[in-house]
Image 1 (cartoon, rainbow, N blue to C red):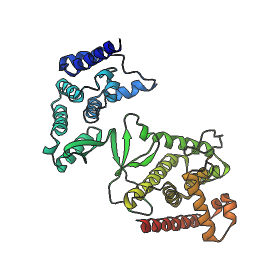
Image 2 (cartoon, one colour; image 1 turned 30 degrees about the horizontal axis):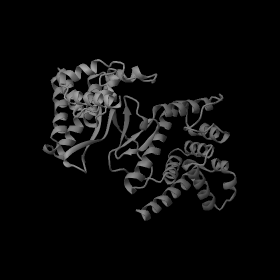
Image 3 (cartoon, helix red, strand yellow; image 1 turned 135 degrees about the vertical axis):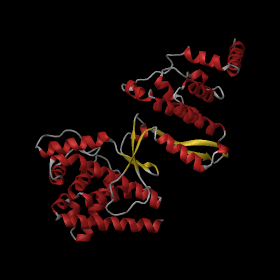
Image 4 (tube, rainbow, N blue to C red; image 1 turned 120 degrees about the vertical axis):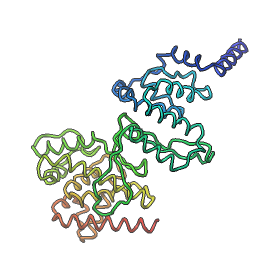
Length: 372
C-alpha cells in the first residue's frame, strides 16, 4: 500500500514538472478557492491592487520574489499552492500577464522588468536606477540589488512597496541632512509599516497617519476639557503632566494636526540621522536624541512625549530614554529633586528646556562620534 502511494506521488510530481503553459493556466483556474483570508479589509486592499499600477506591482513581486500573495489578492486562487514548486512558474505567469496588456507604455515597462530579470548582466547600475525612477512614477517603489552570491548574474529586490514617495521638507533643529529623505505613503497594508518608524530603508521614513490622528484627537479633547480614554503616543494613558503640556503646546486648535505631524517627522528624522550618519541603531540613545529634538522644537509637546514614556507599563527603551533625560537635567541644574519629581521640569522657563535639550543632544552625539 505504501509503495502504491509513493508511486502515485512520484507520478503526480513528474506530470506537474512537464505540464505545458496552457495546462498550467488550466490548473490555476481549477483552484479558485485556494486563497483564503480572514482579513476584514481584504476587498479594500485588493481593489487598490486591481489598478494598472497595482497589477504591475503584484506581478513584479511575483517575478522577482516568486511570491504570489499580491496576485492572489487581485483574483483569489490565481496561483494555487500546488504549482509553486514548479520551476519557472513565476516567469510563465508573468509572461501571461504581459500578453494581457494593451497599454503600450505599461507593456514596455513590464517587458523591461522581465528582460532585467532574465538577463541582469546586460544592465548597469545607471540603467537600473533609471528603471527604479520610472517605476516610482507608477507608485511601484523598489530597489534592485545584485545578489552577492551570483554577482552580475542575478538581481533581487531589496524592497518593493506599492505607494507614494513624498519628499520630507521639514528641517531638523540640530543637524542638516544632505541626503533627500522621503515619507512613504503605502497604498496597501504592510506589517513592517504598521507603526511610524525610520529603520527600514536608507532614504525613507514612515509616519502612520492613524497615530497622528489619534494624538491630534487627544490633544483637541484635552484643550476643550473633555475626558480622554485612549492612549497617547502609542502606549500611555493621559496623565495630569501630559494634559498640562498639551494645553500649553499649541497656539490654537487649528495648529494641532500640523504640530503633531511635525513632531513625528522630527522624531523619525532623528533616528534616521543616527542610523545613516553614525551607523548606530541603539534604541535607548535613539529615543533620547529624539526626545531632545522634539523638546527643542516644541518644548511642551516634547515634554508630553517624555511624560508618556515615563508612564509606559514596562521598562523599555522609551522609558529608559526619558529617565536618562531627567537625570541629565538634574545633574546639569544641580537639582536632585528633579529625579524624584520629574513633573517639575514642565515648570521650567521654555528657554531653559530648550537649553537642556540642546546640551543633552550634543552630549549624546559626541558619544556617537567616539563610537564611530
